[in-house]
Image (cartoon, rainbow, N blue to C red):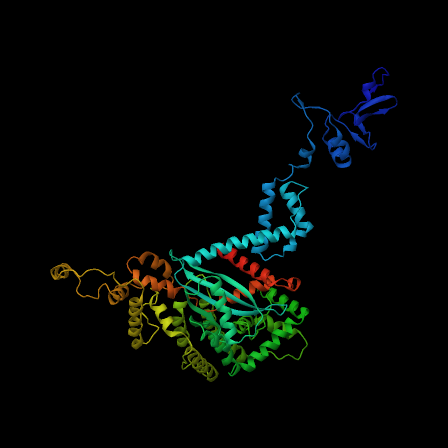
Length: 591
């Protein structure tokens, strides 16, 4: 300790510009301890001020920031104290350009992910952006501004789609009706085509609110209004819909070829066959077992415990729904997978529920085998980003083969297969067979037409020759007749053995001579490399391979619409519904 000298007044000044003073004991200065002048807290002092600075920043922020004096650096140089922006991380207000980009990004986010515009009023989102931008003064744009940007984004994306449709030679569309939670009816329409670079495009055209009754005349007018609005009436080749009577009647009033939804057809056949088969009683007991767990959280928890003990995933059972495709197969498959866990759980519970016996489990196993090919076909034909129209006939042929009864099948399986084959055959009569046959022939994977009877294959190629003959631009321009000696000279020097070599028959013969490709290969990629070798057939390939086999694209559009028109947003205007649904579909398609 040093004795206090009254002449030395600065001896009491401690570190950090006098915010701390040395401790005085018995008239002497103790330089091993300092006291905070702001709160009188005592600290040990050993020439290091780190703990003292921490105390000021934690307890006395105002005093720490108010200090404007100059500190000596460890190197002896004079350094300025950090500014307020440096201490807080504040880099200044966001520029107008960056704020504008943030507004556009918010509009893009709301449109792409189906977020409500009211999200810009969330204080939590504003706080996150303030931290990300290092600008505590940043404010989210108002709803009106974001709505305006969404409109601008919609107009821009729509302009791009219109340009694509203008360049397209042929366009196929699909359509269906949907009812929102507010009981408003909408017509969804999607477009599908192959561009000049052999890329398949699929996107929404509209989801239009309908106020008239679903009479055939009204439905036909609604479809015509959509094609006229997009200026594709003369380009539409096929229109895919379900097989509802109103839709079928409406298609007869349109000039477009009708393409009934194959997936709807297969699923309808499954529903009819299951309602009158040997699986009815077994499925009813399965639904009771699933309901026993679905309606009781405690039962579900006990099932999960048994699944854990057996080393299985804790997955719930699935209840089938008549209108949900493949739901019966999903219910059966999940039950079979968790058979041991279900048995163990029910054995520990006191209930009157009767468990399935060995024969019924065997029925479920056979039913899973029967329905699995149907699921594969519906999933295969329901795609919109790959060629599906040409796969219809081979897929149906595959189903027919799998439903052939064998000697090992029990009576109830034979009955189901016979009913399935009969019902599917009757529904196939309503298909557009000629269009599907041509599409199959123009697909290099299936051009051998093994899915058709031998007697029908020649007729398909004859119809393709006629289509080539009908193509515009085949007529030669008028010219004066050449002298006979010139014509004979040309014939003499020609290597052609037939006058039809460059005509429709020659074009078809050259294409048939090409080797078939694997079913895993892409037919569009094949055509992109063989277009010059087969220019006449390539035009037909764009037309016939671009049509979807189902109306599933509309079903996906309605799933998207259901995410937008929720209970909290049931008051959305029809214009906003169309804008948001289409825009979200376009942005996802572009990704």
